[in-house]
Length: 308
Ligand code: CP
Image (cartoon, rainbow, N blue to C red; front, side, top):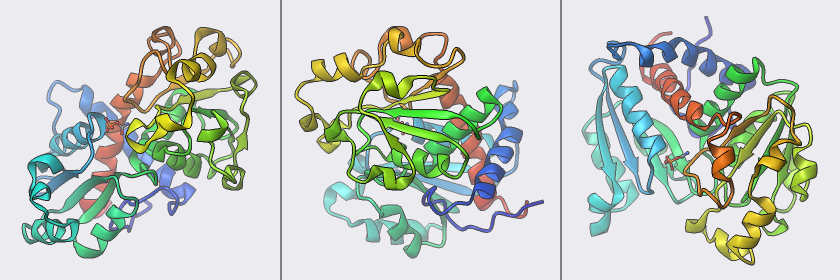
């Protein structure tokens, strides 16, 4: 059996296709635990997992906490606004103090790209990137890949269309890094002001016309405008954006008959996606959330669970 010898999960970019498949296969074996009456196994008993979030989160933090608890680890949540960060403590000092309490894993979300990488150099604990600025969101990309493989039976050979604020999206970056390790056709669409220069160098095609982008798509991933990163200033108005780039039923009809619609959340309904599409028969948005727990259980197990 393959071993996963990494201390940390900092990004998708550095993972091989084999490592990604190993994580997805491991997650498959964990998924059924969440559907049991008693949703708990002793795998990580005696281990301590800290979530250290400097940015808001519903899914990622809850998902990691549930994943750790289902594996019997002890969990501690730290939010920036209730921590000594508001008294001026640096991330480096916070890291050193947390390390003194001997956690086994720290999941960090931070607005500064590279914050998890810095943390990993300071602490012996495994560091997991829960989203660092506009850089990466590796566990989101892994749960997205898991969902694609679950629904489509494969990742290779698919046409995946990513639509929206590509420039500010760590989800888009991590998904591009993961999907390019497979034999996929990746098309990015959005207003020109939200498409970074030289995006094609990452192995994707840019198509500004959403209808042409979606034609024959197997997977459509919608992105939120990152208001907290100034995304709103890149478009003339929300109304114009939603008119041109908001995903509607008539767009979905241009894709393959068995297309799946994805969104990492949180959704801005009525802006990048209509209610009809978000809640419609092709949406797998809540499947993504369910699969996130299994994927995060796998990651915690592989990083701090000892021998595999
Ligand atoms: N997808 C995602 O990262 O959601 P949260 O911001 O709620 O964690």
